[in-house]
Length: 254
Length: 277
Image (cartoon, rainbow over all chains, first blue to last red; front, side, top):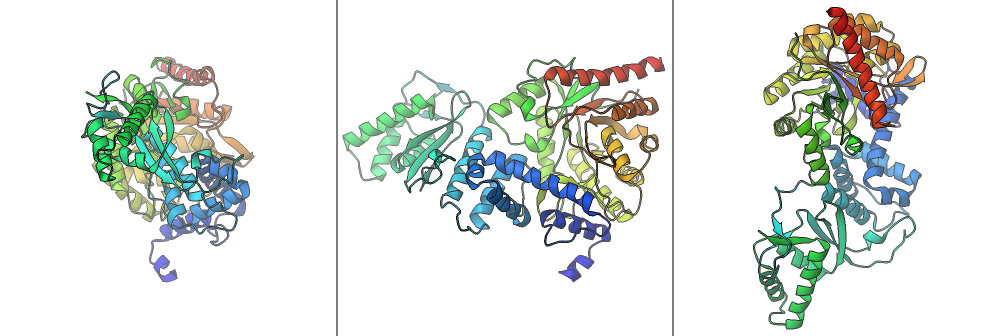
């Protein structure tokens, strides 16, 4: 480690020392020519900045963890995680990757921590993800006989906890599988719909955008050994109608 | 008449200003500036709102994540994305900070590059790579700093050497000159006098926070201090009425208050225009 550092140009050695001290003030000494008072400005600015991004991206998790524990996690993220993204809105994604692959759960951490963070990230993702061009759709058509025009950003996930109901007032929900669809509504608002694992499958097929509503339902039934079951088909129709009402489906493709 | 990428007095566009500024005109705010890192790959309602601004106003890109002086490799695919974004929105030019903001990963804030001969060569070479990709000169900004680790030359000499060697242009941040002159004890007017005028593309002005008499922090969270207005006047007297942009990132006041500060820039520019007649 030391021999590797000495091969660097002097200015770069100083840069690395400076940056490493900001990340890990307790482990790495500051450069010899910078005094405590001036170094403190950098340490505070950087850490506050990172915490601002994390608290802005994960407000529910931040509140549940409480300031002290949240800052410990934030410090660990800042110290250990190699942020690859130059984009500020992707800091949330970097944090999520950190929670998934690097963070070691501590005593007292809620078991749903990663799932809640994922759900909070998903809300941001659905809000800002670019759409592939203008969506051409018809509100009056029949989605069974035409290809449904899906919301341009719609994602469904099966969580082990009801992450959409967790809050500082409800911080300890029981395990309960929750199939959630988060999507961009017709007025570009972020919305969510609670569903079930079976209809998450339906969503995946619909997103392929190559079959009419009826063809999609028939395929789903076939894939699940329910071919020809009229009640199951009717249930599927109900789901499509409801999704169109909610704006998961914007209308018929033109 | 110098050829500037933009004209008059501008304002940095923040996400929080998208709503409040929706009815201002290009006569009130002559140009705007955004961090491409906040807008590349952003669609939905924010993307549409942003597009409505780039259609109406002249824009500059003012980047934050290029990390031109970083020990980490230069992210050329990111620079290409910036170039694409500029073309998509008709952005006039790209400015960035003469600093670094990453070391084994992004740290999302600015750190000072040690002022050394070696660092000049290193930075100048990276600037040239960026210029080749975006096919126009990069505009670098003098940054505010609270420390000068590894310093072997004066800031102004470092800045001039980088400009000379790379062929880049300069965004002179007048507030940063003031902040640094206080923090590091040099003569702000002397610094401004030494700036090569033919390299200046535009100016920045902003408010700062007084942590202590001898330690100012460039927060962009307050109105512009009188000392900085005076230094702006001095800059105009030295180098002409250069296009100038107001930066305000925190404690954002009413639109009326922002416009009145932008009007103060215009008035300062007009005073110079009159005296040159």
